[in-house]
Image: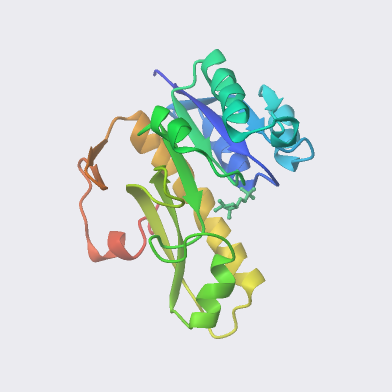
Length: 218
Ligand code: GRF
């Protein structure tokens, strides 16, 4: 089986990265990690990558005068390892439109909310404050606007009356770890067509169950 070459961009703990490392370790998973790149030398995710024998690179934004030159070096690093898909996994830097457009439909992100609700930071606090009944997470193609772009997979996570930011974040994170590898699999298997702002999944039978939670039953 041909495995697509993915590069994962991180800034922190890297639990999503770990989910991707674990998925890629399976012989029947159609992707391999070519590079883990961090803007933060202290990111624990770098340790996870090293432990798995994956090439790592630190490109610290603080070493650059402007965002363009920072992104030029990221671009070069991605191309050097023949990246086919860029996976943002807790990468805490805003990317310029020129960088994003260069990787159009070849760069995805995971966000801890049911987009387009709760773009930006502190998604769980805001959801709890608003009293919404469902939180969740989204894997989407990246567009220049923050947390915008065609949605590949979402998982809904019910909110209970007892939830705190921490308990909710933990359950959403668990769902993130399931849908991120799934999204990469769909892309690697070329099952996604992008039509305008929508990503259409070939052969996906939509039932009420898949609408509520695509990871149920998996
Ligand atoms: C996750 O909540 C992800 O959705 C968001 O940043 C967080 C990264 O967590 N984009 P981790 O570093 O993967 O543990």
